[in-house]
Image (cartoon, rainbow, N blue to C red; front, side, top):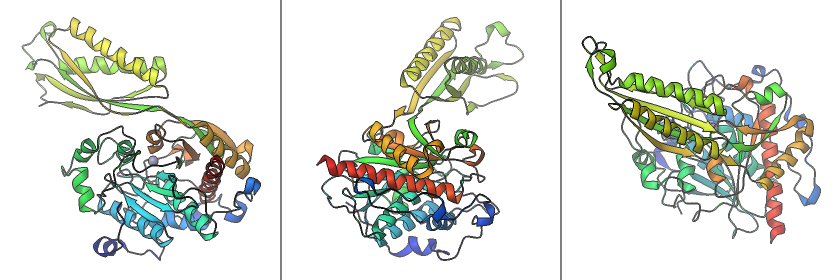
Length: 469
Ligand SMILES: [Zn+2]
């Protein structure tokens, strides 16, 4: 088990203005809907012996704005905090510092996932995890992932300050490289922990600009822990995640809280199309093996199939090998990002794609198409009991009429944890559904309501563990 010392270099270079508000902070005047935290939610009930605790919305809001300084994009409220960058190291150091100060035991695993554990009455049972991520897209916002981690810290602070203890320990978790912007694919910290990706494989992934690997960067920023990144060793009793919605379903339905029932599955493919390079003027059309034309046919097939089964299929990268205006393309590399809430549909899509490819190759013998699945985040169903804890909490706090069940169309660490431990996700609205952009916005009141739901959901789950003994 690694504990982190709050020493030297990292902190010094990061500690610029902890106490002063960031120049790009969102002030109250930026949010017309803002109401005081005291009036933003009902007093939580004290039924079944649950502690009567209220989170500090203003403190949470200040933390969101304060941590936005690491990677702040000048002139915007956005953040560029790529995974394992210097900016990521700074916000990690702050997370460790804050949780250590309140008495948490901080553990870092071999993927740099950070577990800040607040002791409970029974530390023999695994902690209830409350996690998300602090890394961002190259031009991201200050809420995606960050709300979930800082919300977890606020939950722990609220419990700690009440001088009460939960039955199970609680772990605020920062998962490594959720975004996958610098090191693809994303969610690699939780994927290794959940046993879906080998540690050696994840460690070897390099970024495209510097060719530095995840392992090298973990070492450089001093977040390569020795605790196994393994759900069987570093166990959790459950995982709760608060996240901004990144869709506009809640906003359009005028709901305040979304209870996630499932997360759609994601599969990534690398597709190599091999043809025959040839002269553009002297090669008749019927004698060509044009890799680009084959690729275009495949892309159109994928689009048609996706429309038919209500999946989403995206070819975001097309690379020609040594392109030239007067040469028939000989080799093309494509990517495919395929998503659907049901694993069976994804399996069916994959089979249909391979069938299309083999038929195309029969029809065009000089074309060869190799499809390789390079990553998968399983379609995930949230745990019924953990979901019911979140739903009851939400109904108490914002009223039943303001809560709706929903599906996450984006991937999350919770998709991975859900394969190993009971998992639940709570959504708060994203203004206009905007995310992965500096314009991303969720109001102070909305953030506070989400964290209050998170707190009460966790307390209810904790109560069930107490009664299970
Ligand atoms: Zn996220």
